[in-house]
Length: 128
Ligand SMILES: [Zn+2]
Image 1: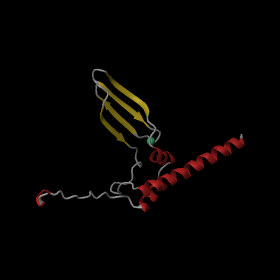
Image 2 (image 1 turned 60 degrees about the vertical axis):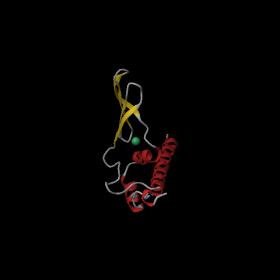
Image 3 (image 1 turned 135 degrees about the horizontal axis):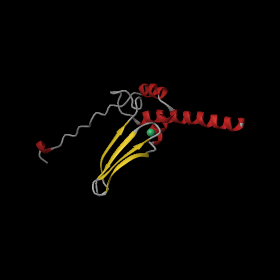
Image 4 (image 1 turned 135 degrees about the vertical axis):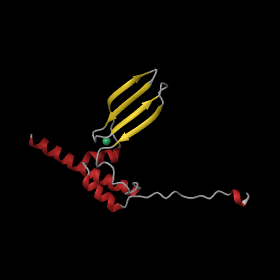
């Protein structure tokens, strides 16, 4: 292979959120946001328009207040998809992407929130 045709492989520099920033984030957000970050959104149909000739635009909402707008072409293929998150859902701009460690921090916070929910449920069952 000629020298000048060799590909120079450059790794894109992905900036990950530092663990401290993720810890600060999980301390701020609701249990619902933690659940969605941990287990993905549970989309429920909110609105729809269109028909087989034009395709459809479907709008879904999640309990965390995120909105998903999905456009289907007349053949049923998804041609556009846009998610809007409620204020505070996303980490501050420039914090960086979530690493495996960042996701683990979120998962632990979500599990702790789940523990509190179940403990309250058990306590109210005993009380009644
Ligand atoms: Zn959600």
